[in-house]
Length: 368
Image 1 (cartoon, one colour):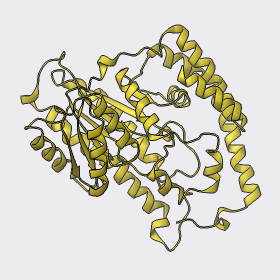
Image 2: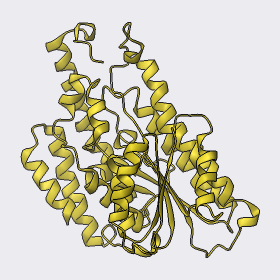
Image 3: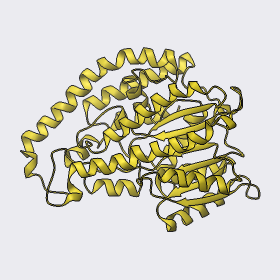
Image 4: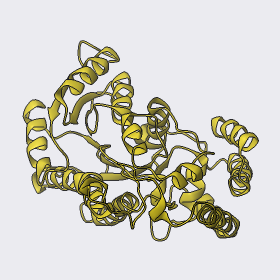
């Protein structure tokens, strides 16, 4: 019942009525789910990692590094991918020290920039050469960045232009993961690699954001890149039915704010109104987010949310996406539009009040 305790704590400290409404509904929903026995069940057999090879991008810091450490502790062989060799070497040492079976597990790193065109083919080839010719069993695309700013912002510094930021965010967050998924699927789905529908499936894990479920002012350059990831995942989840003898499972992780070097970089451009809107949602540690994400993967979830607020947001925007639990997700989805009537009304009123107090955004201090 970790989520219930967190929700009660947040409810007692929340200063905004819309957040309180959402949290209170979350407590009600999570209690209903527990009674129904549809949410808290855990089946670790759906994401076994011991003895399997896992490749993680963005693994030198933050959530990616924490996930690599925890997967090592569960017995996985781990391949770390990131740009900075110095940080990769530090991460590799930490991952090795956490190994469940130090004498049999294997670890390495590959330096690569996920924003470079066609980087993934080289990374997969190097990973296979290191892994005795076999492709990794699991690929987790964690690498990402966020450059929040108001959409109409622009000044003489091209790095502070929202359109420049949007293209860079799309290159890293979307195309970086898309390129990797295409490269690894070409290996996994090759006819010569066919097995049977009952074989242990491979896994691709995309890392999106709760902002792909619920948009907030100030994230124009960032949010579309995460929505795009969800669209790719939904498409692949259906397309992979064409390969019954090459079983692959798709997952999308939806973290919120994480304490990391990436957050420090993000805060350099984050508008003050965005800071105000997020003040009731404290950042989580990378270790906590990684642990909850892995638990969701072990439960076999397609949408992997790491908080119950994220779970509520998920149910309110499912559309044609696969469900974790058709009964619970559908029933809760009936109520979320009613909740959003109050939530969105409160949030939009908050933004309007900010504009009335602070004036035209062109008068705001520039961040870079």
